[in-house]
Length: 594
Image (cartoon, rainbow, N blue to C red; front, top):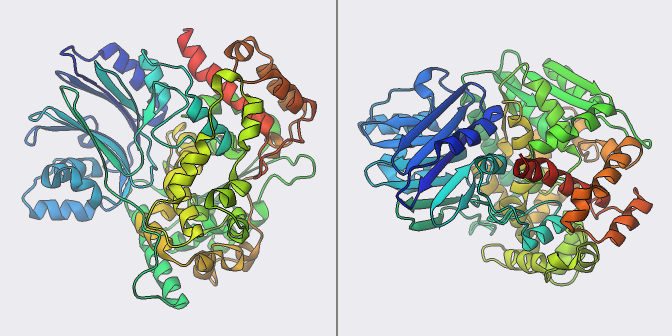
């Protein structure tokens, strides 16, 4: 797990190494163990390393294979690297390191751009072909690892975060009205390739990009998710047996691909508890980590009752952090600085605070993110299924944060656009390869929406502390299996039935049968006290007023009743407005004014 960046020139000039050093420095938190650079004519790489596999200097990056004339920067983990290495050795390749980075280089040489289809894992990487003078960029199937870029006629720059690109300079930071509409409709999600900044794009999941030194570009999608039933129907028992087999294999892959101890972020919910139950028999001493806060407005702010049950049953080395709410407010600016894009979800700062404490004990943790999207765990899925109307109507009634009319009430004329998000969602739902409406919804969530909400949240907030978070429920074989299941099987017994069946008899029934919980951070949900005053100061700031995004009448309406205006999934609309403005002030204005 690392931070990567680079620059490719198309105009005959040399890369700007001062800019590259600024970009690399901005990635230092993602990779505290080593800093490295590579330069070859039109191309330059920067890299910050978090050493997890092959801790020796042989695995430092940028990695150059002089025999193959290939150079690499890589962020992520290839979980099947040992099997691929053995295959490549049989083919005659010799290795100078023992990690997964060199496997990518050899695999690219052996199989070309199709090597990505051989990889099981999370990855974003760039390979420079010294002979062919081409740059190859790739991102994993589910977009677990980020890859942003900015492109003009003279150069390409890429990096693990927009902040690194901004540090390099020369970025168009005007706001994209289409992206803003998506951001305020889809819980902060801006689907690839857009970001809210016009000058920064992101490579979509399951895509590759190839650039020649003259600027020719080829983009390719190498994987799609099939959400249709198999030709030979499976019984319920067969589906459950397959789930257990594939999940066990995924957890084992995630455990073994590490030369440092692996812990678990234990929320006390089904998903993380199941990971503990599956992992515990294979680890001498398993570290688990839970966090909680003070209650607000009578809302409990921890799940220790359940995480304690699991830790006790499996005799883990459990770390429980109970933090006062003033820790949340004090750390909000730091968390926002590490958000690659504005993320209004309440639990972002909780993950940030948890990541700080977990990184003191381990470098790698497993997390339960993705299980709800893959196995139908959210409350809105059955509600959508029960609705009538078009696919867009059924989806939007339970998912959109705001209807289009409210968006136009909120934003000034400069940012008024047609209902671009509705058009995009409708197009995505109607893509071929999904049998039923819920197949369409779950596929959309898993392949396009999830990457820019829970997945990005976990990556950003753990990497801010040099901590690698792995998500076994997003193993692509498990995702493919779940996508072909009948939706009613996933929604049975309140959702995630296949996981509940696997967990039964392994983890406490109280954890399996409890109502679904959400990472509780009520201090950010109930907008009052110091938090309300901070929001007010942001929305009344000179920068906000000058930016001219929001109609002041809408801001005043929300401030008049701070806790009354919630989205369909119970998010604070007031916090959403303030969060975007605060992110822009900290990450864009501060850089432009420095």
